[in-house]
Image (cartoon, rainbow, N blue to C red; front, side):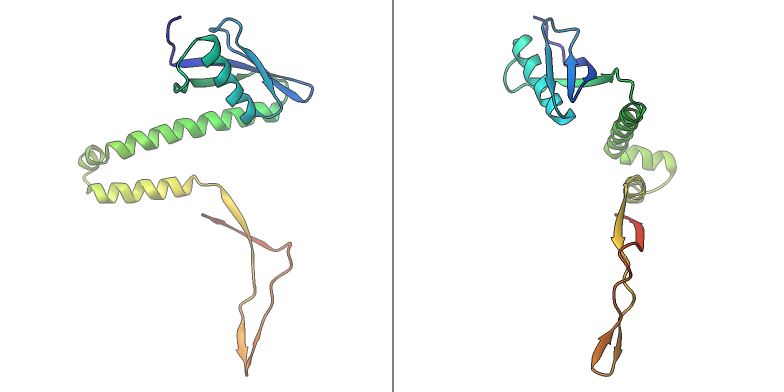
Length: 154
C-alpha cells in the first residue's frame, strides 16, 4: 500500500463513545470513550491496516461530524491553536530574517515572540490574600474568601 503521511479521520459520537473512520484506509474503524484514547486507537489501526512500520507516527486531521455545537467550537479553537503554534514555530526558525525585515536585532525579535506566546497562554485562577502586616510580634491578615479570585497570565 502507498505510504500516506497524513490521514483524514471522520469522528462521530454514538452514546458514550467516540467513533472514528479513516476513509483512505479500507477497514480502518475504531472507537473509544475519550478523544485522547480515540487518537491513540486510530494511530494503531492505521499502522495495522496500512501495514506501516511500528515506529511510524501518522499525522491525523480530525473532522467532527457531531450535532453538539460545543464540540464543533472546541474543534475550531483546536485548529486555530495548531495554526498559531505552527506560525510561531516558523517565525522562531527565521528570527534573523524577521529581524532584518523589521530593522530589529534577533534578540529583540525573540523577546517579542516570547511575549506573544505568553499573551496567548490561557488564564489561571489563584486566590487573593490580604497583605500581612506586623503588629508587635504577630503577623495579622488572612486570606480573602475562596470566592474572591484574581486572574493573571502564566
